[in-house]
Length: 222
Ligand code: SIN
Ligand code: FE2
Image (cartoon, rainbow, N blue to C red; front, side):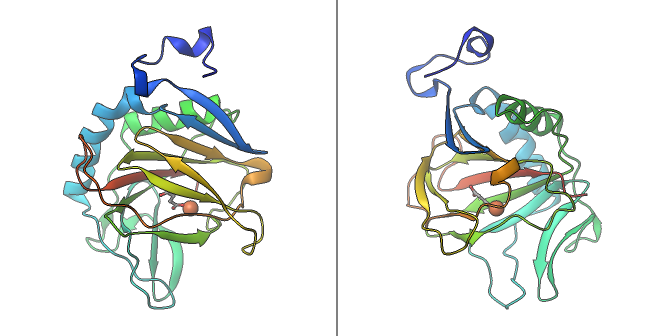
């Protein structure tokens, strides 16, 4: 527990929500419990986004349907289909712009980035991943963004998961970090292109989100 006087008043101090900060690699920080004070706003805003742009299982360029269901908010949304990975201003399902990024999302991402040492993070994209039991994310790099100068801020909500943190080569053996509701991982600089993923989600029931894990991945895409 390393919250000093600066951060102590930002958090509720109940037993399982104590914030802490852990460097997992050079340029990568795990902020435990950081999103907890935002959870009510985040979940209400999430429901509004999903009503406009429902979760869907996208297809990879290789033709595999992803086990994680996805949607987006912000001016750029990450999509994949048979023609490749890219950012699109519109939801291909509706041909309408993705829902705007709620201020709760933007503020959380900017504050988490600053806490991790990345000032002035201004994400234009938020990929929203829904994991149901069994869903997983294979090791990958986030590299569809124009400029790797900005960090990635990744927020975990709902059921716990095992985050896989590898290296700059796909073959680097990943370390495993348990992530719980409210935890955030932020990475940039020398860690920006590290391979990462999520192990298959164990079944369970979360008090606020039920039988699922939601991940919000904030990026500066353009
Ligand atoms: C991702 O890398 O796109 C998702 C990471 C996560 O779900 O924690
Ligand atoms: Fe990723």
